[in-house]
Image (tube, rainbow, N blue to C red):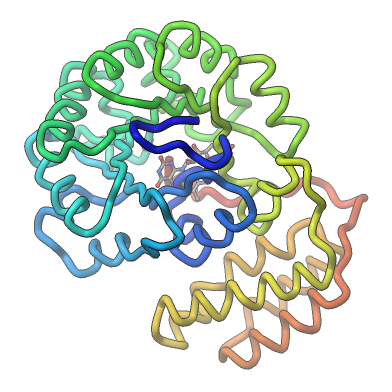
Length: 334
Ligand SMILES: Cc1cc2nc3c(=O)[nH]c(=O)nc-3n(C[C@H](O)[C@H](O)[C@H](O)COP(=O)(O)O)c2cc1C
């Protein structure tokens, strides 16, 4: 799949996920497992323009292994977004993705995220302004529409294409749906049939069969995987026809992720605390996960985490009888 001048090595993308799912160590992990692109989570346009240290941290990346490096921005003002994109470019961004899907009131209140779907003119002006300010390829990530009465993904996508977007990711739920119900892949198909730029399908892909079905049913050019990749970066390899991880591989992968996360955070107390969620995700679907989960919330030091990973993941096999567990979204993101 092509995004501007970049040919992705595989048509699989990690969905941007705030709260750790798109943090640098995990992005590198999924790229190694066969994802062709892994963007940052949504990054505040205002934070970037003001060069807030906290915001700039989201732009830390590995230029040798992230080629190209894609930054997702959220904001509602075309000129401010253009300025933010310049800062991102200066920090190494090679693709700018504009978040047009976030349903969180904190974001939509300011005319950002999915609020842009209700204002296609402003959304288009953002794409154009970023292109003019940076020359970088711009992609957009959209939903089906604001709510069930305004399902405008197709005309909206066409307008983004005219404004210069060079790929469009579609998560076919409305803002009002947030994460409830099933995503409606027929919307991906309709967008794909309407635009010429590559279309990336997203929503409820849990494995190889889903990815193949999504491509078959919609004709999409790329498949973006979010929640199912949390705790299972190997999903990309599996979708590409490779094996599921062995027990030893899983243990080594979780340990390495933890060490890289610790180094990334740069401070053990926060590093341990912020690894709890990924750790629970890694345990999902494995035998003994419920017991491990209780233990995991009590781990306080890096050595305790290392020992717990070693103990649990050295033996934990998939529990075929376990029901599918939902990933906690806090109703907060997109
Ligand atoms: C915890 C979490 C955080 C998310 N953060 C973002 C984000 O920063 N930007 C974005 O465009 N979408 C975000 N999303 C939405 C995902 O990118 C994706 O569109 C959605 O989860 C549907 O795909 P899935 O069914 O494969 O998870 C987030 C989703 C979750 C679960």
